[in-house]
Structure formats: structure tokens, C-alpha cells
Length: 264
Length: 258
Image 1 (cartoon, rainbow over the protein chains, first blue to last red):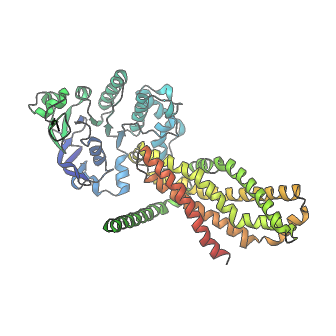
Image 2: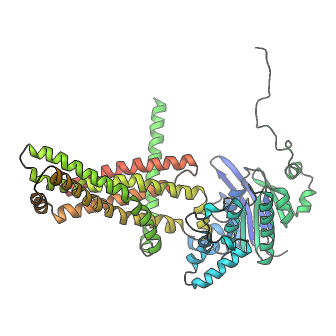
Image 3: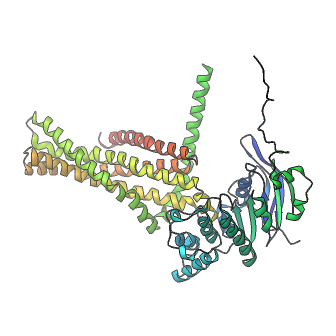
């Protein structure tokens, strides 16, 4: 197997007294779609933030091309981030800018010497790729949730990143939008030779496009492998999660004293 | 008793932590000042948002404050047979105190609260994280232009407030109460000093602008990213900035006019 592009090594992270991750390790390989799955509240978004250096771990390392992201200065980290794209759960478009201005924003900030005509062509190419070239004059408030995410995706790929992170891209989407997003993630990864890290709890959608998937539980990875390997896993927890069973290792009831009925 | 002491200790620690956080916030902003001045398009947009959109409230308030000052001044000065001094009294009250202070209080309520809500919502909708992921420093792109815009806008608003206040006083005293127009202007001209009054009033407005901008943006940047958190931060901006303006006004007045 090729050299990993990202390595998470023995990562531990706590919020107050609550341990979110304990000695977590996994690798992301170039050109692959790596999925990180787990129920709500397992810290998937927190893990993404740790991987891109927005949060600092208590212990452990995140290596990006072999470089520990925590040891980088602010300017080095910002240079590295020009090689990364991120699709946020909410889209996170700048609400005072139009669709066109949002997608052009990273170009204006980092390549202000580019000719306006060239910027326009680049933006239109990326908007065409997500099917929204016709919506470039709209404001974020005029977009549906799915359209916002597609615009955010166009913005995330405008600097031609090498790695793209997706934070719960399918949450709250209708089946058609979900289908569009799945197709886009897969086709962008293959055609632009990207590496994708996808955080989600939408099992079927994720496993249909992932090359490698990790299942998170109680701060560590309890299973990883190809989608076929995960489906064949004999872990009860993995099976409960993949099949969406209401009860199992993750109990239906929040911890409580046993129910008792008395005549007093 | 022990609970009360513990609570006092907790509050003191929180206050110290807040002061430290504010100091770090200012420390982060200082190196960005030179670069911020040259981002002209961003600056113009923010001056429009903070300054131009505050004009209606400043114009209306300035006019009415001046009219009331004229009425009250005339009423008091008449008992000493010196109604002609009403122009001086209106102008000095406005230039030295009411112009900078009332304009700052109105600015804190209109523009300060809007800044906190806007920045707080930008954080809660992950726009700050998105900027960081695009390798754009939110302090440079979001915070600095807004601070500079406040520093440009408030002194201008205070001057407009003063001019309209004097006009309001003139209309009431000369137009309605029959004070001599020549006496109104000539006494004002003789008794208002450019440096001691006008420049000091201007300095006050600049200081208040820095205070309001820092309070509003600090509250926005550190608001808890929920609707309740942003709402509380907005309230804190108006309360802290208004009290800060009044406190600073006393300190500045005691330095400038004693």
C-alpha cells in the first residue's frame, strides 16, 4: 500500500472531564475515500477539527505528509490548509456574499493578482461541476440546503486541494439531493484525483462510495476495513450500527434505576 | 457564609479570566491595524454598515437634544437676564459632553449590538471555521475592518450630532423664543475654543469608538454559539459599552477640563 497522506497516531482528546478520544489511530491513503462513521455524539466532527488543526489534542499526533500539524506555525498551517478543502455540515457560506463571490473568495484572498476574467472562468468551471452555474448571482439565503452544500463544495475545490474533508454531508437532505451529493463526492474524488475523508452516520450512502471505513465508539476505532469487510464483521456493536437496531451494545434506555411499582 | 465567599471567589476568577481574554484579543488585533487600513473595499462596506445606517437615529436625536437644550438653557438663563448666552451654553454642552457621549450611547445600541449579533452568528454558523479552513484569518478579514470602521464612523457621527444639535437649539431659541440671532452666533464664536473644546470633544468620540468596537467584537467572537448565547452577548455589548462610555467620559473630562 502507498504512503499514507494523513496519519492519526494515539490521539487523545478531552473536553473538561469527559474523554472524547483515547489512543485513537488510523491512516488515510491518497486517492481513497475514507469514511469515519459512528452514532451521534461520538465526536466525529471533533475528530475532523483535530485532523485539520482547528483543535489541539491532549496527546498524540496528526501527521499530514509526515509533518506533525501541531508543530506548525500559524502561517505554515495556513499554507498547508491551501491544500485542504472542507465541506461543513451547514455549508458555512459567507452570508453577505453571492454564490459567485463565495466561490471566488479563496482566489481573491490568495491569488489577488489573477486576471478577473480568469477568476470568472475558474469559478464558472467549479460551479458547472456542481451543477449550479446558473445560480451564481443568487444570495445564500435564496438557496436550499442541498444547493448551499453544492456551492460550499465548489468553494472547497476552487484552489484544487489535495485532500477534502466532508462533515456530515448528507444530514437533512432529501433522497434526490443525497443522490446528487453521493455522485459528486465520488466523481470529484476520482476525476480530480483527490483524497476524501468523510464523516457521517448515513451507513448505506457512505458505504456505497467509501474505499475504507472506520467505526468510532467510546473514543476509539472498534472496526475498520473495506465496506465488505465491515458488513461481514462479527462485532455486535458494528452490526447494531450498520443495521440500525434500536437495542444492543448501545442500550435503548439511558442509564436509570430499575423501574419499580409499589402500592405505598 | 462559605458559599458566599466561594461565589465571590468564582466571580473574581471569572472577571480576571475575562480581562485576560480581552487583553489577548487586543494583542491579536494590534499587528493587524496597518494591513486593515489598506483593505479599502472591506472598510468602506463596514463604514456604511456602522456609520451610514446609524445616521437616521443620530440626526433625529441630535436635533431633539439641541432643541431641548435651547429650551432649558433659555429658561435658566432668562432668570439672570442673559438669554443671549444660550448659544454658547448649547454649543459647549454639545461639543464637550452631549455630542460625543449621546452619539456613543446611540452607536453602542445600534451599531454595537448589530456587530455582536453578526459576528456571533458568523461563529455559530461555522463561517469563522470556514474562513480558517480557507487559510483566511477571521481576525484580519472580519474583526479588523469592523474595528477601524467604528473608529472612522463614530467621530463623524458625533460631529453631525453636534451640528444638528446646535441647529436645533438655534431654531428653538432664535426662531421661537426670540433670542437675537447675532448674539446667539457671536457669543458662541467667542466662547468656543477650537483646541480646548472641539478637539477634546473629537478625542472623546475616538476613545468611545475604540471602546465600543472592542466590546462589541469581543462579545461577538466569544459568544456561546447558540441563539441564547448570541442574544446574551448582544445585551452585554450594550450594557458594558454604555457603562464604559459613561465611566470613561468622567475620566476624560477630569483630565481635559480641570
